[in-house]
Length: 272
Image (cartoon, rainbow, N blue to C red; front, side, top):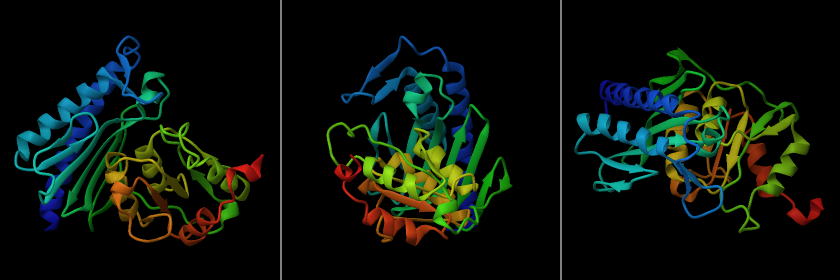
């Protein structure tokens, strides 16, 4: 795949993300009567999710009618074994959006032969556009970005999240959160995986881990972090499988130590 082709994919994904972001801005504060749960408590969908997705599908369909799509609201579109698979979250952070809490984004990633190679994350509330493509670098509002230089866990600021099934499983990330809160300057929770990854990429945060994720939560962020000089793997430093739902993303300096700590977290009962 040539850099020219990747740039074209990146520019069209940007067009779609910006258009979807404009839709979200128009709905912000106006969705109180159009919120439903997908089946699990706290797993929300709004008219804004669907309207944002419609705009993205329209833009991508106009340019890449033969490409496959995996999106949070409509699911699988086209042959999922296609060389080109667009993985889309039209509104990552729906609960935040519904409460007008300013951490949500549009996330559009392109997998080529199963590998994330193009990613766009647009935060319309703060008008921040994060973009990257394989070997083309990563930018925030068209300006190059790099991950942080923090190399000591005790001086780091991390971020994580808690999945919708946290009430139903003991593997809910609570113990990991407590453990790493004690070892760092703090652990934040924004409620938007794509925003978390974007903030690792631009150096605001030093590392991120989470479980219970879907491919559309992280497909775009993976390539953005990597192109900003960071590292993204599974918890145990093996290559990430985006369908696994688990991710460890860092500035690279902290990757091995965070991996080690995650794998030796004491059980939640030890914190009682």
